[in-house]
Amino acid sequence: MASLSSIPSASSMFQAYASMTASITLFKTMLNQVVPRQVQHYIVSKLRSYYRPHSSNITLVIGEKDGIAINEVYNAAEIYLSAKSSPEFQRFRVSKIPKDPKVNVKFGNCGKITDSFEGIQLVWRYVHEAGSKNSSQYGDSGRGNFASEKRSYFELSFKKQHKEKIVNCYIPFVLEKAKVMSDEKKVVKLNSLATCSSILWDSVNLEHPSTFETLALEPALKKAIIEDLDRFLNRKEFYRRVGKAWKRGYLLYGPPGTGKSSLIAAIANYLKFDIYDLDLSHIRRDSDLRKLLLSTKNRSIIVIEDIDCSVDLPERTQNRTKDAEYGRSRDRELTLGGLLNFIDGLWSSCVDERVIIFTTNHKERLDPALLRPGRMDMHVHMSYLTSESFKVLASNYLEIHDPHQGYFQEIQELIEGVQVTPAEVAEELMKSEDADVCLGGLVNFLKRKRICNNITEEVEIKDNNTTPTDEGVQLPQVKRRKPA
Image 1 (cartoon, rainbow, N blue to C red):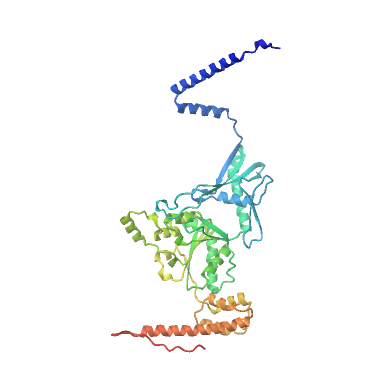
Image 2 (cartoon, rainbow, N blue to C red; image 1 turned 30 degrees about the horizontal axis):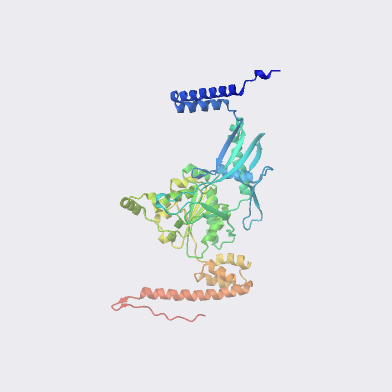
């Protein structure tokens, strides 16, 4: 056993500590004077990396977006992982969409899910972060603000030696599995802009029950539209071979109440494509239009309703003049050229299997550049109700399938001689649960409508035959007939 006399005294230990500290301080001072600080940091980092234990795991970060485009791997992972659960979960997100019988339960922030693929253990982790608020959405224009930016991403961790198999086999497996799951329980979404000053989409389930079977359209027109849609879906390789973007444009034009919105819903339900309802009055410049295009998904429908009156688009030649006068960039406003590029320019090829639909009540008001083939490929005239399309309404509203019942033949004859929309007839068929009462009321309505049409035609004829005099313009006098 060592004796107590061999233990150094406190004073000697303190002196040794002070001497060592002074030596270290002197060494650091000399080192800082001789060796540049950047070289010191480099040496320290190398020493740390050498002595740091190497991890055997690797982590893939899967962001919600790739630049300004949607990351399909992120969307596929969200669908694929929604069917899985983990005992490690402590936070869940619970939601229920109206008319959806199921309650949706998803993992919350930082939730973990374990998975396996061909004997490889994988760990998924979901992270959601709220970002800072940008000062201005429109740069130096100062109009409107972004909502708070949000950042969501998945982290996929696994052993480093399995990287090639995970990237080349597992990720494609997740994409394919998610596509199958999505097709099995496909719910058509209706997307619209989040706010008037936003370029972000908000979505709800499309609950519109319209189908081609319930549409009051001429059978030949209905058949032509369905055949055109089927041909479009089945020609992916054809579009690739001829060097065209895989998209199709439809122009729906005609008087109000002829079923343009119902036809859009029927197309979406038939194709199982999501709808993006684009209100041009909320778009202030061409670059925002491009961002919205890139934030939409494949297999979708972009709808611009009442395009003739939704926004006043400057002409392409006017834009160049304004730019020269005021020194403004063409990207500072929404222009006709920007809309044309959106439909049929280079940016339109960024998304596949796309349907673009314009609606208008006045086709003659549209710029011819919007209507040419390649932009609006099929023009669909939504006209007034015919006797054939009335049969569909009678079947839908009154469950009448016999054309010889009651007022049926009289109504068909009246419809052929009067301009009436499907919306007007549908309103009459909803006024009673008794079919005979509805049909009788419809007969009276069509007779009144015919009288009004005849009076209008007589006024127009007399207006056309009236010639100006020296005292001015002579107004025609029309003797109104009493309603029957």
